[in-house]
Amino acid sequence: MITIDAFRERRVLDATLLAAVLAVALRQSAVAQELSAIIDGGAAVGSTTAEHSASATAGLDVEAPRLGIGRGWQIGATGGAAWRPLFTMIKAMPVSAVAPAYRDGLWLSGGIRIEHVTASTEMAVVARAGSAWIDAQRAALASNDIGDWAAFFDSGVDIRWIVPLVDVYAGVRHDQRFHRAGDLSALRDPTGRIVLGGSAYPFQWGRFSAGALLEFERAWLGASRLPSAVSVELSGRVRTSIWRH
Image (tube, rainbow, N blue to C red; front, side, top):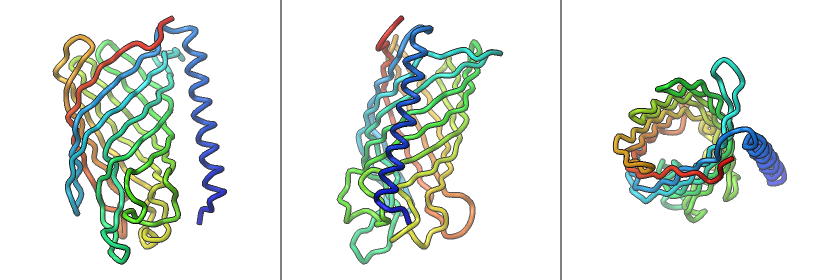
């Protein structure tokens, strides 16, 4: 069982790691072109075996200038904040069984992107760390000794086609929101998730583009696992430069 003090210490470590990533980004900015940002908004539909839901979304992604590391590879820092539906486990009543659902939440993350770039594609290995908060009453969420904010760590492979703008992602995630305790104590390794995603933005007008995103997540193979879930989002986004050297 993770104590409150241990959880707080872990969050301090997460913050330290993210600060180190941002420091690398700022160091890179002295030798590269610009610090860019993508602002997006739209509407998303989340679906589980128990219910379907729809909500508005908004987000900000920041990409630091890339630093070349040889043989066509480069490394850079990323960060972001998003308001969007997040997969969670809920209880209709205190005595009810837990059920899968999507609820609006705040998603904060930072990480690194190691990529190989050609004229038409970007192939990257991505690693992130962050924290998430669900906008719901605590009594409505599964109880498992985790506070309002919970850490997550994920990594995966991302392939991006530049024209047209298409992105495919596959990775694994450790999500502390599903810590195995309390209402989730009977589940096997609930924090481990497999995540598959893709997006396409076929409509582009200058810095603005519009398209759709899909994300599917499921537990590791085996019995007594968390259910799967899928979300689809229609989104418009604007790419802009925050700082240029």
